[in-house]
Image: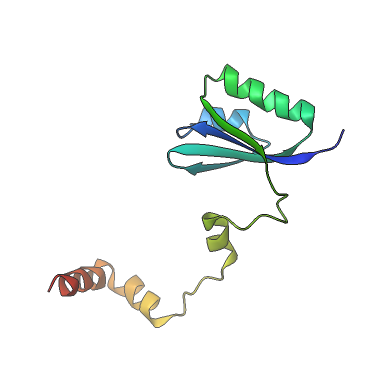
Length: 111
């Protein structure tokens, strides 16, 4: 059987126990729903849908998704892909000054 990438969207944020049931899939919370993404064959897709039903999750949508190589990076993936800019002076000041700089910036904005 051929495999395809699927997105299964359910209502709400799923907890750790439910995440274990979907351990073969990527789980991303996009309030007010959770998106389960993975490469599945037809049998695997039906198995995942059975798990959704067994856990009492409300199904919103099931769709064939672009393969991971074709789809754009999601926000969290994009953040992880960018190099950390710890050497940037503003980040260094914030790291050393703690909340004082943020507090001063907020006060200045209110003026």
